[in-house]
Length: 104
Image: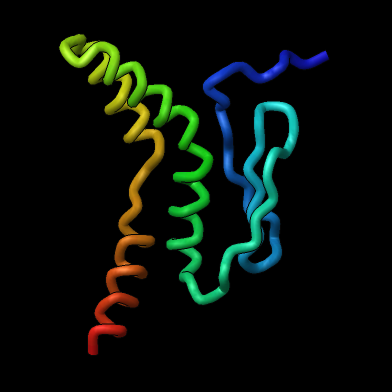
């Protein structure tokens, strides 16, 4: 028998093999299956899904930081959560480019 997941959920991203299809998994089972709009680049899709999977840990770190703004451990926890979530550069670049196209 596996242990039940605890909060905050440790979620991982899995590419399903089909274009634009991802799964977000808990430690013992899949939780969410996603189809992403194919207009986004694959790196942008990965960024978005990875941030979705990181949301519970990011939220928990933010709550801890808000409750303890002067505690260096709360700052470390928030920084660690942000680092684990990874870069959003590909998604930002995609959406910034789309915004510039609409302005032209």
